[in-house]
Length: 257
Ligand code: PEP
Image 1 (cartoon, protein in one colour):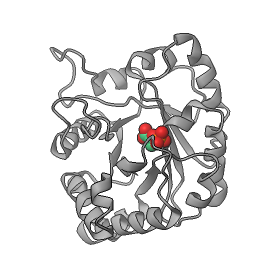
Image 2: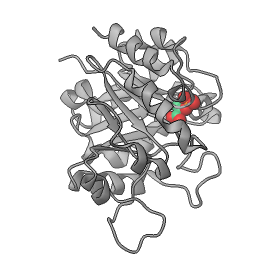
Image 3: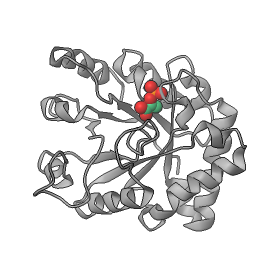
């Protein structure tokens, strides 16, 4: 069965002004979701303002959650609260939370992220799990990249369920840098990850699980990346704050038809 494409927009800690939110929501609602799942990750402060404003077929997806639930967890967000708000998906493991950019302290480990994913599942939620290597690893070649990403995937083996988990492969060197992985690099890495899942989980899960590419994806490079057979969508940062986001959704939807 073909994998349905999926594109996420990560607004990170943007915008500054609440007054800009309606415009950003309008960009997202302009996407054609007929042949592509779309999710958006507003900043923590803004989730509560915009989560009812997205059209059907667009999932408001927080950028983090804890692994315990509600209670004495200052500054945290609980899956329990997300469920009550009708939210279905949560993003975890973004490199900006794993400490790749110096924040937060201490960085989130893959084992902790697996605990978060398990908690999301226990509440009936689904999970986008971000992985990816820094430049020093990429420079050593594909074997080193695979070894690095496999360490991030290993704690998720028992949680690997194509219905509940989407993997976002985001090479750290391409996030917010304007340096996009080439289609060859993206395809090679996605195919290697899928092969590893086939060998270490099972072939059916590997075939069905969706792997997004993330890292300076734009309307200009999305068509070429979308042509890669193992690229099932995008996790988009900067361009998700612009009207070109809808073009990225259209590019992958058209490529996979
Ligand atoms: C991201 O935030 O996950 C991301 C990929 O950012 P950008 O598209 O800006 O590189």
